[in-house]
Amino acid sequence: MSSTPNKRRAVVIEDDADIRGLLVVVLQQLDFEVAEASDGLTGVEAVRSTGAELVTLDVNLPDIDGMEVCRRLREFSDAYILMLTARADELDRLTGLDTGADDYLTKPFSPKELQARIRALFRRARTTAAPTEDPRVTDELSRAAVVQKSLLPQEKVQLKDYDVAGAFRPSRSVGGDFYDWYQTSNGMHLTVADAMGKGMGAALIAATVRAVMRSVADSPAIGDAFDSASATIAADLGQSGSFVTMFHARLDSASGNVSYIDAGHGLALHVPAHGATRRLVTAGPPVGVLDGQEWPAADMHLDAGDSLVIVSDGVLDVYPSLEDFIRSVEEAVRQQATAEAACAAVLALAPATTAEDDVTAVVVRRRPDAILAAHGRDEAPQTEALPQ
Image (cartoon, rainbow, N blue to C red; front, side, top):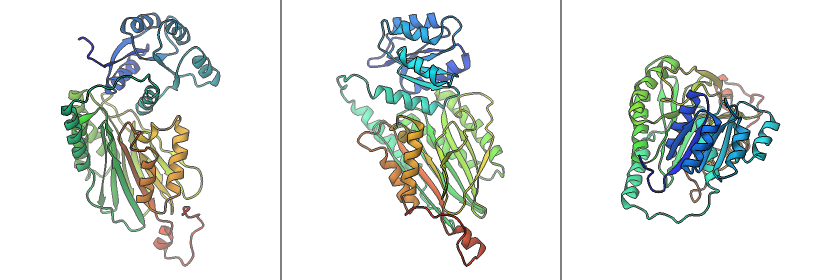
């Protein structure tokens, strides 16, 4: 098939077949036309023949190593080169950058972080003439945005001792972000997901995910519920060639215990009333990437004044590093007195005038006086309240 006009081209140079396949899917979801190579010399020729604008480059290759591949590519190509490697040593990173790489990502990596890095690289691309806007595309994006907004929960959570809010802002390039929640007899269930892709297709996949996740609400074990739902979702995703990153959690409001599964989302944070913010553990890859995948559940605890914050990669894209992203989200949340204000502050980190992706934020905050109310004490527990 010939290249379509304005289609960006990429070459994946990776000797591991499973990782290579994942990279191809991730790049295709960013609308790249992708060629692949399992060794360095083949990869160099693929870049030369395709005129690729992006190269993902494994450092450990079976013939020549990635550093040498990078040097050879720089003799004729100005493509963005993103090195992927299991080497985490600072010297290796510096060597890769010195040989001409534009960025460096350590394995194992999150597909969402990879996409964020790629978007950041192309924000520095040369200025080109803007294509004429197709009114049919504009109409599709508008309808997709309507579908996405219809997925958001219409009811507010009314949980004693908790403040829950969410916010969603679609971008000009509509994706498949959504969040959903509903109350249960002992607390609430919460899902935040992102269907890879753009336009109405991604929005419809998100609608399917929402419906399936609600259908397993009565399953008592979160792991069994997620496995059942993911099997159904994966069948639909296989037909569309897409995948979904997802964070699903169940809150027991009396104890403050949160059971959760993170399938490739990777952007959920525990912001305590005092102490360091931590990023919650990712249990596995996105749904739809690997057959027969299982996702183990994990637990966290919300003490009085703590917040659970889940953010989409539209905010991550703004920052040069994951550390900067976490620091900024933490600061935005801590400075606000309510969950609703915290969500608005997080969305403001990715201004609508410059954001290239949908932006979503959900905050579940246990009120600072929650434990006092639960135990009927006359004095406050020894925890620090959130800054006002």
